Image 1 (cartoon, rainbow, N blue to C red):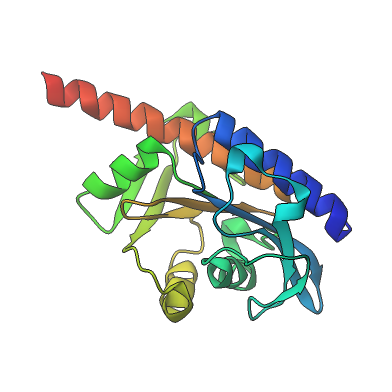
Image 2 (cartoon, rainbow, N blue to C red; image 1 turned 120 degrees about the vertical axis):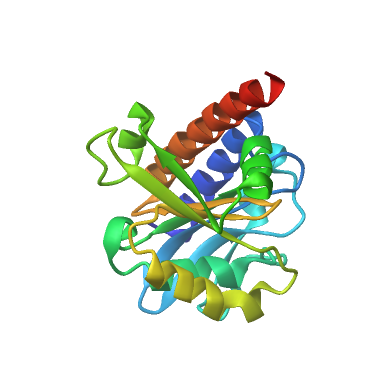
Length: 212
């Protein structure tokens, strides 16, 4: 797809995520591959209201996170998007062509309260919405990374996590939110919808347990 077409789709997805409460205010960032060789990504700019996201607020970046088309500053996590696209060459997320990052209430709560270095989700029918999953009898493990204000420096660690967990469909950043991906924007959107549903189910279930 062209940059213009991709930017229009990213803007629409951003507005949809805002409407669902997954990317309120200026939170969240979204990208999609425009070309592989050379690597070029369309990505949301920093500090924009996702409920009002427009094509003008999408820029094209290279593999170093530098803007090559459009105006504005790319997301501070642009290098993280590039790292995910480059690292996902195999496993469940093979050939990641789009990366979506949400800041929902439930992903934030669960990432803060998970007792381990990751969050396990198992036994739910909705897991079949994830790429390659064919049964509810599946255990999804989402690594949890500590938050930082310097994601460029954290890229090697993120790449290592992605290679260590080739079957993961995403990861959480503690007290921050979800990163997931897909071969294209449609698949990445489905992964967000699936995982956010599961986060809310788990969060509400744990809340009921805490109240007893």
